Image (tube, rainbow, N blue to C red):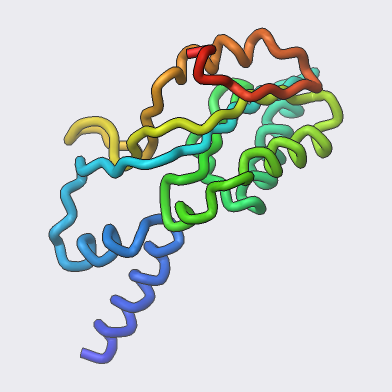
Length: 167
């Protein structure tokens, strides 16, 4: 019984790093609907990196992820040479204001012209996306495809805010 208590406590502590309190308690009680999405403001930061080799691109993507984690962002995914970051998808939800601006500034400083960034804040949903066969924890915000288009037009070493009118 004591062993179960400590295992349960350790599991809760681990899950609280990634999920909000309600989700942790529902999960531990076996009541969590895996497809329930939460709504709210989500700050999105798209970062493209460049390099001379696949290894240098991978290293820079890892460096961007490390910077993001230091600033409390969620690393949603890394694909090809793009890193998708977000604030507002988990336990850190209450500290949205300004996070993406600080993060963008630090990425640009550390990447020395080898990155470009597009960022915005949108009202969206987050949680488990997909089906019973394939789930991933992520977010959906309006204008994401257009943000990718905007990212392709930004020069390396530059960053821009994606405005509502851009969507």
